[in-house]
Image (cartoon, rainbow, N blue to C red; front, side, top):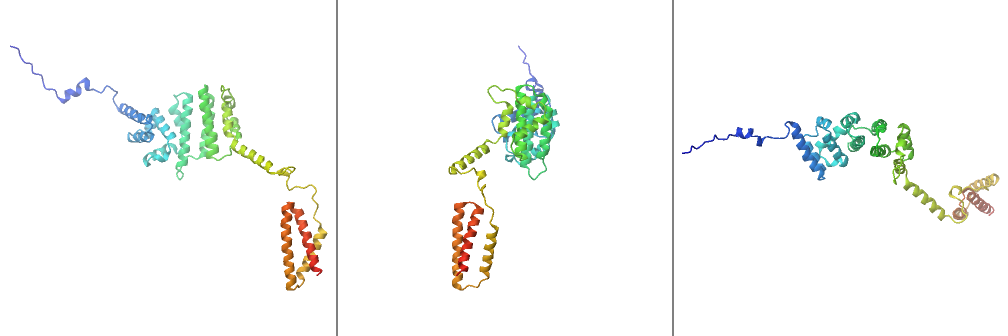
Amino acid sequence: MSETVVKAPITLQDLLKDSRFQDVQPEGSLNTQQAQYSTCINLYIKGDKKACLERMFTYELLAKETLRSNLNIWKLFLSICFDTPFEVFGVSIQNVLKREFSATDIPQVRSLVQGEPIGEQIGIMIKYLTCILKCHSFFVAEETARPNDLETSTRDFIINISGTAQTKDDVRQLKDLVEFYLLDLQVTALRKRKSPALYEDICEQVPGLHSQFSVENGDNPTFEAELLTKLSDPIKKKSRKALRKKKSKSLPMGTPAPSTLGVTKNLQPLDVPKTLRWLHSLKKLLSFRHSSRALAVIILAILFSVKRAQTLSIIANRGIQATKVLFKYIYNIIQILLSI
């Protein structure tokens, strides 16, 4: 007769100790943070950047200590802020943006990305500087980094990083950084006139920059040529050329150039004796007491003179000559009236 073996009942504590129910992932907050980061990065890949940043805020991944110590979380945060207008976020996230981008802290960012390739470091810095500029534009009434200070910080970074750019990708990223410095900062933010002289100025301050950007780029223009093209103003040049062409077409054949219009080499000086005689006659006329009929004749004569002067001004188009003719007509009319 076989004996029945009775097993002890399995308690909850036994189940918890069973290896099949153990967490095989590393213990501690790192595991939780990595899982949270994976959830957020999935939202980013799906294109829902606003929801991604909101989830990061919910997970407390936007805490200052976390952003300063975790490069992947910092890069994700920076990419979202770079691509997304600040106004789409709520007040809580806007406060985080203000905290991170209201002042320039390039040394802190450089220490965070120092293990990355040079091209990657420059790309991250472009996004960071762009976000600082966006912060200044968005929080207009707040105390933020001024464009003048940002210009100085960016120029110093260009000077420090330019010598380390070796590969073609590094130089391309450096070109994008210089483009941000010239167009976004100096032209747009500081409202400087777009000119190739801005590029020449930064080349004088950064030794070797000109030679780096002058290297042949296959069938494409050199990086220097790209920058100079963007700093030129082809629309304004085209409009000026079209305006000159339009003016030249509107002038009749034989008409001097616009710069010489109104300048006559054979202008005669004003006849002073005749002018004095005209003024004497006018004074005599005004001091003479006329009848109402004579007054009416004088008014008609003056109106006739003004009308004739308008016609003469249209025909002559020369101020001094038209004035002399006008004086002559009025003088003759006054003489006739005085002889009545």
